[in-house]
Length: 258
Image (tube, rainbow, N blue to C red; front, side):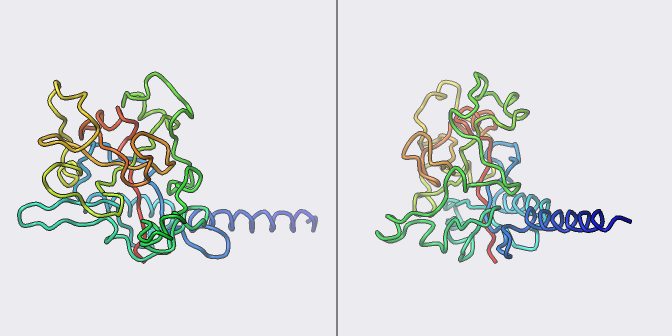
């Protein structure tokens, strides 16, 4: 057999193996993926099955790309309820550092992620449009990238992967802590797909007494409110259709705790 062919084939297989490992575990050199934005929603609006269901979705998506050897947690807060203390998103994601699919560091620790000091706030974390990747290594489509008149229609969006979907659920304040319990910022702690009454559909995108709502952020830092990655504004409601109307589909951040 031609030696050149054998060497070429062997080199191809080696590169293929490296590429496969890279796709599953992060950048060359051994840095594993420990952060991603969910590529697919649970698709029941703000009803994620609580934190348990949200975490399970993170774990399943990670396992699908060979990163299931980590323990994954959703970056979601829950609010105080009778007999249930609030849970802060920042307290459930481990200590960092966290790296995306490409092996790019998003933040070195919880304080860096949230800008806990003036110096860290000025520095900022490294979550941007090009670094806020899904577990498949894809950029999350945002505003004005592939505009379409039906961008607010779930029937269109669910079959159009490049439609605008850059709002991610967090239920959190800018420092990663839960909101006080008086108004809903978490779709009833991620168990509700309810919407406001039809007469209230145009109320502001914020928490209001009696209004089903979820606080969202933008991985691309480009949107309404303050453009925050984790706490920009609320939603029209908690149904799948309500999330889509403000350019989200129920995606959220997942962090490895180990």
